[in-house]
Amino acid sequence: MTYLTRTAAAAGALLAAAGLLTAGPARAASHDLVPANWLHLTVTKGDARSGDTRGALLLCDPPRGHARASEACAELAAVGGDIGRLPAADTFCPMIFAPVTAHARGRWGGRTVDFRETYTSACVMRARTGSVFTLDG
Image (cartoon, rainbow, N blue to C red; front, side):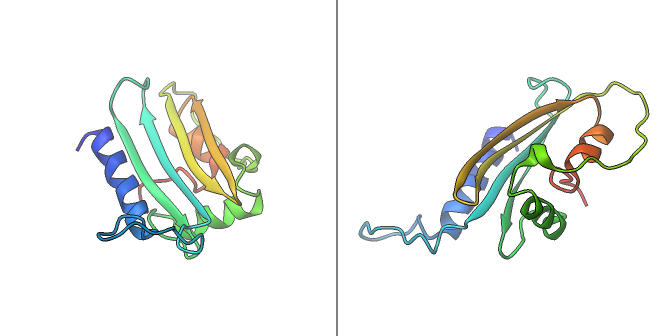
């Protein structure tokens, strides 16, 4: 499945979960139906043109849609959804250059989130972002 197909499927799933994709007459969406805290997360290995991208739709309250949703939601809640403020883990990462780009788009606490950062390796990314971009089990 291509990245665009996965992204479209994730967006459709979010809209369906929010009750915005329904058959019948148009009606105003209730703010209670739209999840308050959600992020579409992607991790791309190599440069952004490589196409080796994994993604997940992280929904919080209740945590779901992500391999480590509970941990990721708790870590984000502690910093008000600001991924750049996540505390760095005291981790030793080998000095192997294998860049990864982490990207998060969505809403947290009523504000838009658009975070993108390229790290020198997946180890460095995990040390800087905790469970948020740990998309595999």
